[in-house]
Each structure stands twice: as structure tokens, then as C-alpha cells.
Amino acid sequence: MNTYMRQLTLRARLGLLAALAVAIAVSAVATAAWIVTREQLTGQLDSNLRSVEAPPGFVQDLLSTCGIKQPASDQRDRTPTPYTVQVITSDGAVCSAPGSTAIKVVDTDISVARGVLASSLHDAQSEDGQEMRVATSRPNLPRGLGGTYAVSIAQPLSSVTQPLNSLALLLLGVAGIGVIASATAGIGIARAGLRPVERLTATVEHIARTEDLTVRIPAAGDDEIARLAKSFNAMTEALATSRDRQQQLIADAGHELRTPLTSLRTNIELLIRSEKSGRQLPEGARADLLASVAAQIGELAGLIGDLQELSRPDSAPGGGTSLQVVPMHEVARRALERAKLRGKNLAFTSAMEDWFVLADPATLERAVVNLLDNAVKFSPEKGTVKIALTGGQLTVRDEGPGVMPDDLPYVFDRFWRSPTARSLPGSGLGLSIVARVVQRSGGTVSLRPAEGGGTEAIVLMPGSPTPPSPPGPTPDPARSEQRE
Image 1 (cartoon, one colour):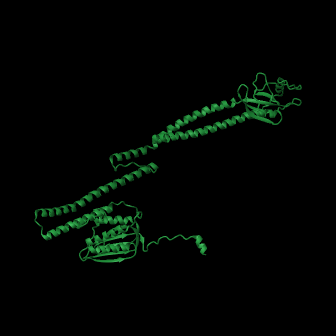
Image 2 (cartoon, helix red, strand yellow; image 1 turned 135 degrees about the vertical axis):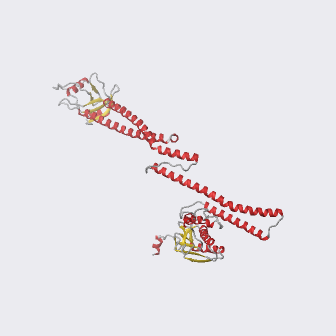
Image 3 (cartoon, rainbow, N blue to C red; image 1 turned 90 degrees about the vertical axis):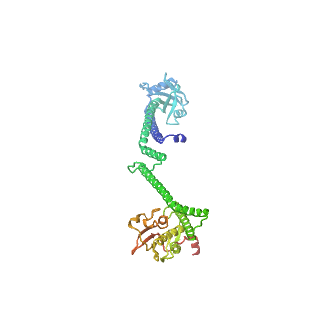
């Protein structure tokens, strides 16, 4: 059954389930109506049988047919009753009217004839096989006509079964019509309700076939289908944006890699030609050429490292598995020592307060180093680079030319470099890495012009001035009571 249902379309399944539900409901109602009607008809028949009394003269005639002599009676009412009437003696003999079919006697009938029971009501079968409803009781005869016998008054059960059979056929027809109508209505309702799902399915199939992520599904209203369409539109928009960023990253990375590779290839070819021709380059030119090769190799290595960092999947703030409690003040001091090696002609000042954050130690140090490298790169000779950490705010300031206001919205984009910085070494990924690391830890980063000239980078990181204490063992109340 489950295999068959899975082979049907969703529309057919909904229609079939609707028909099944209506069939169960109609069957339950029809069965209940039939049972109630049967009980009412049977109760009415029993009530009629209990209220009927056979005429004494008619009973006396029946006793006479059995050879039971009775005293003379002045009863003149000997009209035959419309019911089947028979007399049962205490020894089980049956006295019935001539031409009528006797009804089989049961033990309760004999008990009534003997005076053990006052009355009896039961189903019985006549000798010709007809089902009868029988009420047996002691007759209320005039004085002198009594005896040890009982009178059974019966009526065919067909007076109940025939209306019940007609009712059953009627209910069966109504139930069949209801099931067919419900199945038809269920399929129609399913078709109308699933039309938005069909549009969604067609759109998904179109996207899978053409990889066109610009397709959108019309979404009107706030029902479940509309919410599904809006969610799907948001998903395709996010996928399109992700694919565009990926393509842009590949294009930018290819462009950035091409320049140092071209320069490196040119320098190496020049060295190879010099070796093949036997014409040695001047010592100073050869040293400059080798230094250029080493610098380009270092630039390639840095660019590849930056691309690897940016290729890692993003995670929610504070949700990464590698995040841990890190003393940011110590990370900033280590980054400052590394920056001093690159800015030997610069002065550095620092003011650090203790601050503990949830971050990855290695990537956080790299982010601070990138901020300091930018400050070193743009600072004039004998300039000063200032770094301060106060209340979770890290500030790095240089005395360089500053950032143009029009460039501020783009400084954290990948591979973006201002026109004044394109002649300087770098890949344009440093600030992108800073923004990614800070956002991963739930912080924010921004650049702004510094008072008096230069640029100021501000990083705000959530944390606390003291490290969180590890959870201690839960005290045992039983042991505490023993100590008391």
C-alpha cells in the first residue's frame, strides 16, 4: 500500500486521502444511524407485543384444540387476533390455531407456563423457518379458566428487518455518492492548492536545467506557499550573489597573480639567457635581479596565503569550533613586535589594557598585523605609528596621507586598492581578512580620517577585562549536610 501511494502524484494522493476520510466518516454515521433505527424499531415491536392481550375466548378455543377441557365461560369475544397466538402448557405442549404455524418453544416459555417466570421476550423461529419476535406471559383469564399454561404472542421480525434493509441500501447509496463527490472535490482542491507548488517545481527544474539564478517566483500573501516562495527566492539570490563573488574572486586573483608571475618570469628568463650566452650580468644588476625575484616570490606566497584565508567557510559570530578565549592585549603586543621589524625607520607607541575575547588566536594576530602593516606602509619616514587597546576598542593610527572619503566604502572589499596605493606592494586582501576575522568574533572594524592627518583603524571586540573562570564542580548537598 505504501509503495502504491508513493507511486501516485501528490494531487492524486490528496484526493484519495480526502475520499478515504469522507468514506470513514460517512460509514461511521451510516452505521450509527442504522443501529439506532434498529433499536427503535425493535423496542417499538417489543412494546406492542407486551401491550397485546389475547381475547379469553380465543385462548379457550386454543385450549380446546389441545383437548384441555375448560369450564363454560360467558366470554363471547372470540375474534382471531392479527398476531400469531399459541398456548404453551407446563409440559411443553403447544396449542395453536388451526391453519397457523406453530412457533418453537424455548425453556423460558415453559418456565412462564409453570409460574417460575412472570414473562419472557425473545426471538424464535416458526416451524416454516420464519423469524419471529415472541412475548410470553401468563394469561389474565376470568376466574375458573386459569391453569398451568402460558400464552405466546408473536409477530414476524420482517416488520423490522425490511425497513432496516431498505435503510441500509439508502445509506449505502448516499455513502457511495458522498465518497465519489469528496474524491472529485479533493482532487479539484488539491489541484488549486498545489498550483503554486507546481510553479515552484517548474522554477527549480528550470534553474537546475539552465543554472539561471536570476529567476524569481511571484510570492503574494503570507501563507505557507508564499513563505516557501519567498525563502526560495532568498536562497537563489544568495546563491547568485555567492557565485558572482566567487567568479569575481577568481578573476581578481588571476589578475593579481598574473602581474608578479609575469615579472618573475621575465627576471628568470633574463638570468637564463645570461647563463646560456656566457655574458654575465654586472654584479650589482645581478644582485638587484635576484632581490627582485625573491621579493616577487614572497609576494606570491603572501597572496596565496591571503587567498587561502579568504577561501575558508564563514561561520556565525562566536560559532566556530576553533574559537577560544584569547588575551587580545598579548596578541596586539606580539603583532606590534612583528611590525617593528618592517618599520625600522618609524617610531611606535602603545597603550594596552587587558582584554579577553573569543577568537582564533592565529587569525586574530594576523588581522592586527595587517592593520599595523598598512600603517607602516603609508607612514612617512620617521613617522609614528600608534596602537592602543582600551575597553575592547583597538585603535591603530598612522601619519600617512589618509584615505579619501570616496574610498572609505570600498576599503574592505577584496582586491580593492586606492589609486595612491597601487604602486605599493600588497594584494589588496589585508583589510578584507581583517573584516572577516573581526566579524567572525562578533566585532566590527572601520577606518576614518585621524585628527591632524593620517588614518585611524578602529576595531571593537566584545569581551571582558578578566578571563572567564572555568566552571567549578557542583557542590553535593549530601556531603554538605554531613560536614555540618
